[in-house]
Length: 626
Image (cartoon, rainbow, N blue to C red; front, side, top):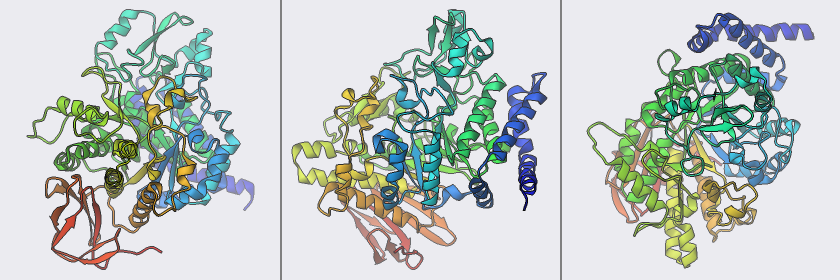
């Protein structure tokens, strides 16, 4: 076929997709800008940006588009095991990550989230979340050619690349901010600025604080602008003004450009904060959802192989909204972080009781079709206890007392705590109460090693694998945070590290310990035991009949979580004991197979060891892997 025929066929694909998504795109854009006299011109410009991105898309990625359109739930396959890391912490550079693909494959990883790697503000930059350019890689990590080459190698190895789309704010040295400081009115309108401090105080009366200790308040005075700039996070992160349609189209163009360099999944950073309204807390506004829906529609038209993932640290009742509700059900983000699973698991572990965890998971709304959760135990951020502020009707609880207990427990400040973590940004009821610390240190391994107590080391390893077994069994994408697969401890030297900027989360962002990784095949080592445990979970998970979420979550006895998935006649059952004591567990009727321990013929009553987890299937329906 001649080039012009290829082009015509490709454009036909584009226009067919545009027709399918026209209603969704129009609805989202109209909700944002429909009252503008120039609305039609902006809508046409959005489609033109999508068309240009589609025409620039490499042939291999166009083929991936077609495959993903035929399999819209591709990211929900049970073999989807995620891994999250900073490029420099993991392997130094993008080329270094490419050299470590074999390690990721050995672990069973099929989804790699590289935390911010785009050009970032020098000095303090919130771990790269203060982006200076959406179209350049941080020079110390590589360049855009390295990014495309890495994405291609990952794709060839069966691994999808995820990157952050930093859509709420830019760094104060981004080109747009610099032009605004220089007096360019066009770019000043890219940001939320206020000449009168009284306006900021009117907003502030209703706002919470994300970094109440290190960056209190939500506004920063700019001498160059002689105005107050909205800065939800740090003073050097200027919030973008999505009431200006130019900002949305700039963000869409940045996303599509990265997609054409091979990024397959975008984590939408700070999704709840995208729209500001006087009199509200400026989170979860309907317009924030409309912004995401517009990005989703433009991606579906131009780069349909791409999935969007919401970083929304909100209670369960609001979380499902980021997957789409009503006419946009299943047409917003494809994935959302299951923050509730994470926090409730840690609560269960501290209390030795799984009842609140079961209640919370059963109260979660089910995700819409072709959407799902990203399930995780730890990530680069703190464990935010703020989402624990509601629950099933009729279950009255003192949530503030629970959050306070958990913060103290995981900081090692309660009598029976095994944890070695640190409280993060804890000041008062309006602040985010969080905990920093690696999975292993929070599960007691750090204390056990310091004490030289072999029994406590064993309990700590069991806690680590228990938490992973529950997270992996939930469904959707299961995420491993770098180093957790080796039992890596807190970085106690984090305050001397080159990237430290006063942020306590660097406690659990230590560099990858490749010396520990070398011990992953040593049978008697803790890294070996933990790595093999994660590896076994990944291998077994690929064979399981996992749904997008469990069909039933219950307890019995109180310390034991029972999670059921029923798919096409198959029944998968997780049993997880959050107590250090062995307990007898009655199995449902039938004969079961333990897929992790490779045991058949289980029925009746099963002894479940302290901090033990079992993955059970009805006999005869498991697909064994080699």
